[in-house]
Image (cartoon, rainbow, N blue to C red; front, side):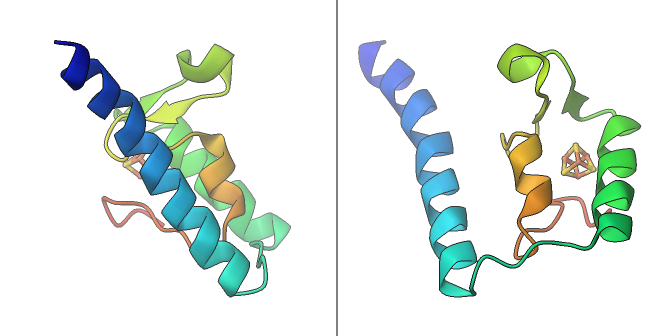
Amino acid sequence: MRILKSATFIDPAMRFAKSAAIWAYEGFPMPDSEAYSMREKECAKCPHWDPAAFGAYGKCKICGCSKLKLKFKTESCPMGKW
Ligand code: SF4
């Protein structure tokens, strides 16, 4: 059971580290305000979005990412919504 709890914590951390590394490698590109707003709206109305997670910062239940992902231009929605 202890191993499962660790894996549950480590997987999102590893995914975030990989996403951040790619984002940094590409020069920290961010979406413009229109693209960011579109991402935010798609997640807000998506059934996979958990707005209460991460202290009400929000989280995608598919990829496990927080709202911070929306600021990484190098990221995309796992369901192809943005
Ligand atoms: S990233 Fe995609 S699947 Fe996840 S909550 Fe946002 S719109 Fe839904």
